[in-house]
Length: 287
Image 1: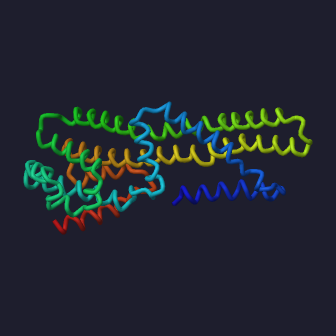
Image 2: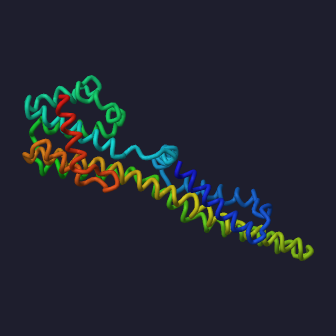
Image 3: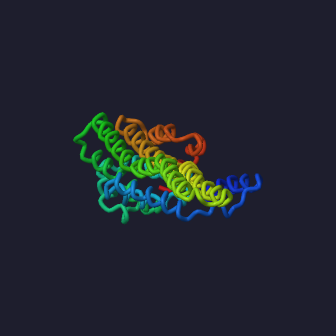
């Protein structure tokens, strides 16, 4: 909803200010220039990206209209889940994890956290490294290096839509100039018309520059920034899981390990020490 709200503010501010100067709204309605700018932008987007990048961008666009799922409540659930898994692995042996990750949907632990189960990417990341811990063939340094490589690869792939949208945003002002130049060419080719008509043609041509800049910085570039923010939030979740598991591998108690994970979260979503401690104690009393 914030995307829609932002667009409404942009349009209201620009058109409102234009109306305050006595401008006529009808002069801004130039569908031909929209066709030139929009068509050129779409064509450039298609030619600049691979099929995978185009599909990834189209998949990312609907998600931009949703609010972030990575909030304090979800982080608390993740850390509670990690605490339960690591605590039971200590009490019942590491093979307990093997049984739980074999079929997470049927697991007595994972089934208590439906929001986490509903995130396939997070589940794959978590269960893969729990499986490595069970196998016991890799030390903490090796697993940390592998985690860093996987997170870096995920970040690179997830930011492809942001880069694609940013390049389109950078190109839109130039396409606006193209539309304006074509309008000016049309006006100059009609130099024998009365000055009032000729002035209107030139004014209509200048709308192209206006539309290109407005679409770039008011509509498309903000989408690229929003994709980057969403990727950063997802990466932060993976880093929280990574730090918690590594702390456990290095011998720290589960309660201390989840505290390691808490410390890497953004301050806006990070629960306080007492909030996490109370939540973990509540979970502990139920297990």
